[in-house]
Image 1: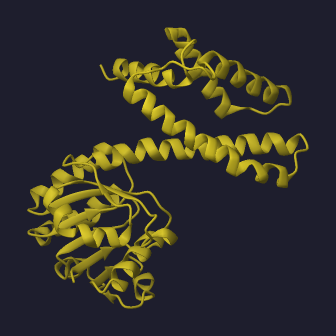
Image 2 (image 1 turned 180 degrees about the vertical axis):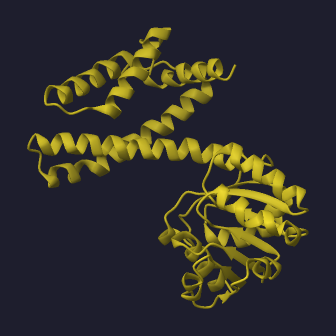
Length: 291
């Protein structure tokens, strides 16, 4: 059993605190609105943040953003010495690196994490939390962290890695949802019924998953050949989608971005390769942009 302090008891923080308490850990919670913390059962509540931090060996941060973390912890830097901090606040890779330096300078060990789940999934075997930072913290709290998310994984010692992966995976998920909403709105405006849309979701989701697995394999092997559909075929299809939306005054913002990305890959000479060759074009753009 570990002594854990959870700082922040919003929707996600409350889910974390409840799950830890249900796993028989000694949990102390703090929140600016202390009533939210007091609503939790099986959790001790401390209104004084300094005392809350002092009560735990492991400090779990679950506030709104990194700036809030800094504003809360800077006046209490002396209390952090000798403690272990797991930050589960969403943010950028640079924010994770900066906070790691701050926590380490205070004499504490630091791991940054990115939760890839909704609060209702916390504690399930399906939930994902990616972590990076001090390897000893991961080694010592592995079981505790897996109780929060069955698919908990450690990406490496560099603290920004969890947020790098969160930006890539989250960016893909957000764009996928936005693309669906754009397509759904177009379909509804042209008379497609709800049931017809819903009936195809599983098919397209399964096909997308299959395609993404194939893309990783192809990119790993460096094999961009195809006997199914070239990048040029995808580009023609994307242009048709965009033109059809524009014809009835739909912006087609997401499909428009896809058309532009496909056009750049085609212009780079990948039109007769598989659509996975978009990766090479994106990688080249990233390398040029990073110079």
